[in-house]
Length: 601
Image (cartoon, rainbow, N blue to C red; front, side, top):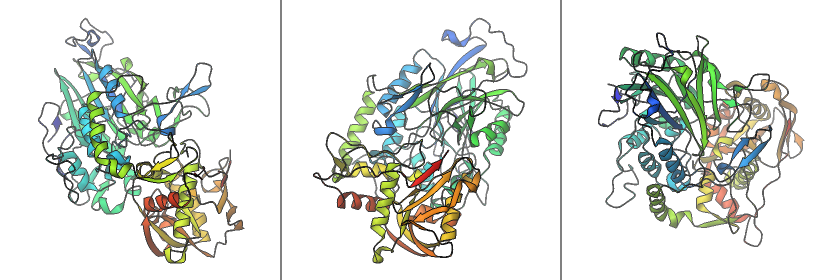
């Protein structure tokens, strides 16, 4: 059964088949077959929309990750490209109460407006949302009037059954209801998961598509997550599920929608690209070597059927509004709105009532900054205050002191905060009775936010949780020197060839990364050192890492080959213990120096 905007929301349980993905998209391509370029009187831009041509506003965002409160430090910044070609930093952006205001202002005067998201609305969330299994974020998204969203990999952080609860409502199976007399109602918008199916039955986990309709104007949304989701989430929670090819799935359901008479289609896809510039307003259609956009989304977009009019994407936390040619060679808009609610995309889809299709040449798309110079939305502010009061006894507990903000920048391979976390893991697991670790490796995606210094030097539990929200258990395993080198090579080859994932390393480990070379050759093998000594390929080393990496997550099968595994405390507990033991009000902790990884460009 297909879900439509007219139908009352019904339960979307595990392996239910239905409708609707939601991401945000914009598209620029040729006119649909048989469509006229004439815009007769009564064009949708007059606000009435009863003529032949109707302008539909598509507002979209992605990778919110439960950031209800304004993100701090580097997570609350953007880079803007100025007219003279230089860049400037835009500070103090994002926050759900400001995002709500911007979206509501953007909708004013638009009879036809739909709001979609491209996944990772929840998961890896700050304590305010994560402590309550992201119920606060879903409640906020309901208030924001989100119409549809695709699932992302982080929607599976707590497994498929928890995702079903998030969609359909109900109190948490072990922690119960968080507010007396209140039962969690679930998402009012459909989560779409077209390419997530039961291995045995082949049925989709959740609705594969959603049909938005108003006054006879119909737009179909197909929602998918990246095919590699199983490699970047805990295996336990997704047992029995298959994550299918993005292109094959989108093309399949585009045909389904066409058979239902829906010719205007937007794909919400939790997979993305890497523009040549990190500036949110960079023109990624700029020609020439070293310009434009790269990454998985390019090949996907080039192979998704021309029946799809726009692609709204996510996952890479980048900002872009590009055109990538469809299989017929016609340009098609592909967008992404960075992350953490710092941007939203506003796309105009011009709908032809006669052909029931989008006039691609009339499509316009742009990203807009979620500034904090607007009045915050009162209903979201009250929501944040209500949940903050519940979280306060835990969130406000002091756990350490810092002398300066310790950053987690997205545009460098070695991050000060990544170094701090790796050092904490080594310190916590080096004692013989804790595993005897000789070095530590940390996945960069597990570091979720900077450690920002406030008015004083105090670090709270809530801040530490926001940095490491997964609560992965730590492990120590035996790896040979050869396996360690192979793991380093897997950072820039195999599954990570297009988008390198550079592990953060403890202070006693170092090597050279030569980005002028390709694939595994980027690791200069004879530069790998432990305590200043070359790694011996045949020698065994005790390596600390979280259970996600021990399971081969993030494209590191070499790390899954470790022997003699010992399981220790959680990564969060290890991090907090290190902060407490190594800092005080009199001697606050400073950011570790970088230079463990020498990068040749």
